[in-house]
Image 1 (cartoon, rainbow, N blue to C red):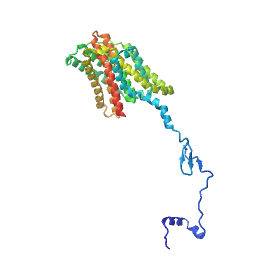
Image 2: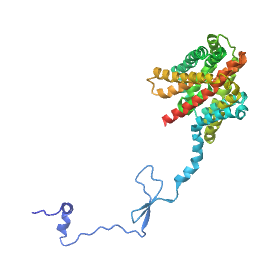
Image 3: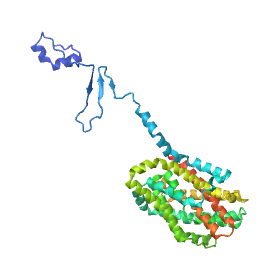
Image 4: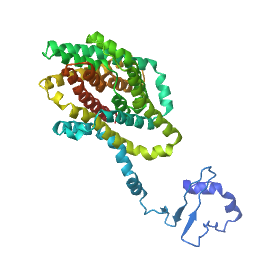
Amino acid sequence: MQLNATPQQWHLQSHRPHLSRLLPNTPLPKLHRPSSPSPSRSLGISIGSKNPPSRCFSVKASNSIERPDAGHDYASEAKEEFSIAEILKKSNSYLPHVVLASTLLALIYPPSFSWFTTRYYAPALGFLMFAVGVNSSEKDFLEAFNRPTAILAGYVGQFLVKPLLGYFFGIISVALFGLPTPIGAGIMLVSCVSGAQLSNYATFLTDPSMAPLSIVMTSLSTATAVFVTPLLSLLLIGKRLPVDVKGMVSSILQIVVAPIVGGLLLNRFFPRICDSIRPFLPPLSVLVTACCVGAPLAININSVLSPFGVTILLVIIAFHLSAFIAGYVLTGVVFHKSPDVKALQRTLSYETGMQSSLLALALANRFFQDPLVSVPPAISTVIMSLMGFSLVMIWAKRKD
């Protein structure tokens, strides 16, 4: 027997030999698909799945598939709907530019910010802390307390590394640059105060998960500043400064604790309200921060433009720059094995480089007779903010 069939023919014959033997002269019937009365039909596809497709598709004879409302552009509609919210949320990226613009405006036209006196400063900082609380949860703060080593490192940066740098630059300003002794005392005074609440907001913009840790660090340094700042001023300057303990504690409660707790409670029990106000918090925070930077400069413009202004400016820049670098580098050495070492370095850099210069300014005006002592704190308020939020812009771009 010869097999001359092609592979396809052999395949058909091997599966149907009995038909050719029983009906040798009868052609095999052809299979026809059932005809449809209409050229198209609707298929509700469900193949035993627990989650069947939510839409049915129209299958035409030309094997083309049409989706319902194919001509409707949902993407463009959604883009238009959320464009305003996205713009509001991204307004934080313009913060360094706004801070720089407010600084120039305060220099050129001081009355533009001189109305923003110290009585508005506490509510402004409280609003920034409220914005942090709305975007956080109580779990974040509980996790922050589980890092005592990092909290201790922030405290050391505030009250050991920074005062040493302040003492060094205070001596240099008098011995090397020939500035008056009260100027050196003012630089040392800046290094003796606690951390600034603006460092918490800067950390929130760069590493939101580290904001609770930064708040805990700043709150601890502020709470203990009632004892540490007078001791440091006595050691560095030789003058013991009495600090209002009751006023300091009240300031912490008003500026830090109450706004953050309010934001946390609002986020916990009224999430819909938080979702509705959250897009508006970034632009308002940018505006508030610009006022907090421009107002001290406008109010103390005469001190900044004093005969020693340029030299003091350079010394203050060197002081803050060295503090930022020291906080970043030392944290990298101590926590080099930590999985979030980079975020921790940025956080402690803010904590070390940014301090409550307004507190130093208030202490200088109240307890020192020489007005030159208040010049370094006034300049430090502006330089600290500009340098801190410039780092926010640099580090945020690197993360992206």
